[in-house]
Image 1 (cartoon, rainbow, N blue to C red):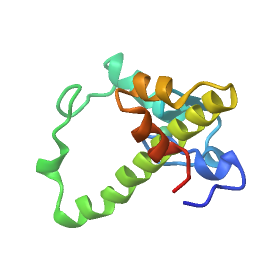
Image 2 (cartoon, rainbow, N blue to C red):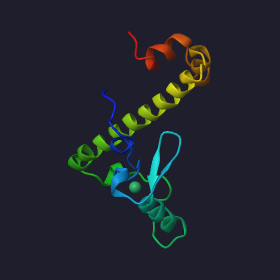
Image 3 (cartoon, rainbow, N blue to C red):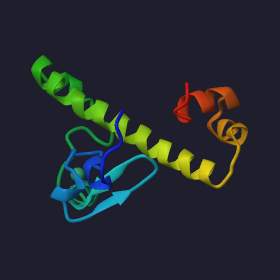
Image 4 (tube, helix red, strand yellow):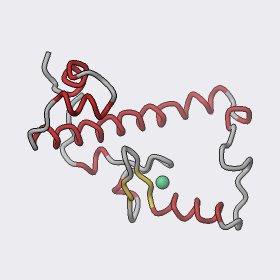
Length: 123
Ligand SMILES: [Zn+2]
């Protein structure tokens, strides 16, 4: 996977998929981002001024056509790529600090070898 030229090309809201260039603010969490618009929407749902269709965990599949589901899965896949890139940057910083593959693997619940294979970029 080629690295993006700037962070702006990579970072998108994990909820609506808008890139950082199309929103006022983007708040980072561990591997996820949320834009100011989605925060406002969430606040409206939480304070009750906007009804969430079926509570906190919405079983949206029941209401979607096959076509709608097919158009949605690229967004889910993009989120995985974004989270993977974020994890990679954390691991790269740990390596830059001299933290061993053994400690990184231990933190992730995988072996030193698995950590190296997944994140080192070496064959
Ligand atoms: Zn958003």
